[in-house]
Picture 1 (cartoon, helix red, strand yellow):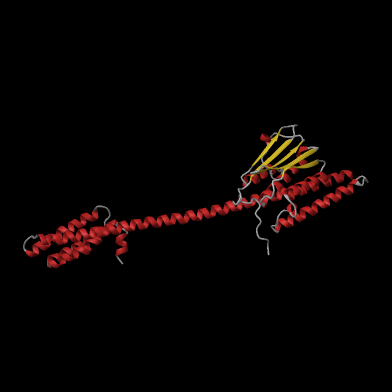
Picture 2 (picture 1 turned 30 degrees about the vertical axis):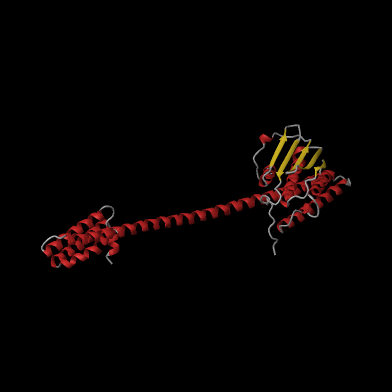
Length: 353
């Protein structure tokens, strides 16, 4: 019961050792055999006294033991000194070795704790990064599908409102609005079910872009033409989705902001890359003076397009000036044959069961 208190206080350890030393000295006065108790006493001193105090206490105890044995034998001999000295040396070596192993064990324990904390921090950081990436992906999807469609519905209904004067054109605008709403409802359902984009089902990227141009021309006061400069051939699904979404976002910006009369969408295969260009003759703008994205005013389209291109190792370039139209150019490097493409910016998880 006393030992824990002794170990926790340097003063308590000194008092304890003095008491034990006095008791041992009394035993030495009675019999020379008490010299053998010096060996366990060495360990107690080395464990309780830190630094140089332990070896000094061992040396003092060794001297007392040798002198006491010589007094009992009536004279000093070499054998009387060799035994206690060897015992003291062995005790010091054992305790020093134990202390070195203990320090190494403590260091290893701290390293393991640090590694465990680092792994936990890394897991938390990866989880946070995954959450942020998924939020960014969802934001791009909603902007490029539902938001674009709802914006078209708003424009069409506004045109229908202006045409409600008995003109039969009102009915045509309303029908187009209904069709746009139906298409976006289907897109939302497919997105929730984690299926591929509807525009790419049963067709190539070139076909999907041509259909997008035709739909935009039919639903907006804008003539959009599609050109296939060089067929890039079959592309990974991630590339087709990214290029289609970029084209949707670029044409959506043209319809809402450019006031253009015509637009050109060009798909080009460049051997080791694929390029998409969207050019309009609208009012243009200053790319260096774009406002920051705002939940009320929008402005998320261009950052979303850049993020899609960057996710596949590509680039997005915008050239425009006030009154000079706008050109959006996306270029994605194609993966080498037999290699795995970059992470899909629109991963398709397993459909809900």
